[in-house]
Image 1: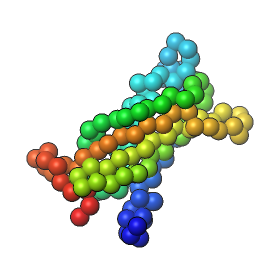
Image 2: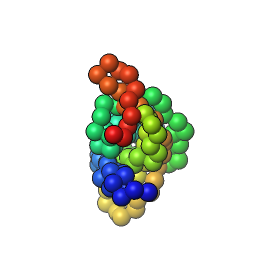
Image 3: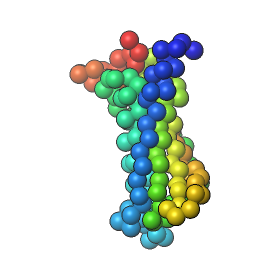
Length: 130
């Protein structure tokens, strides 16, 4: 892999930390799935934009696995990484890790893949890489 591409991949990794407050939980007092998906899409968008430095739009999300519930009063880290670069599209894998606030326990809870297409000012696809 070319060094410039690897540098762009490394520099576009995006990490966001949040606290799961009660207003973002469901009736089981765990993070609402729709909220998790919104956070994941946002982090994926940031990673895709940082990688390409172009306008991008989400065209699909696939296989979002909710492996562990995330209770209220938990710290989460949402990590987005560009994992595939096509001609006009790119894929970003996003993971949500949960951390207990008052112990060092940390584990992956959710993982999903988002696909983006780079577009021009007329919303037509354009190459991701120059």
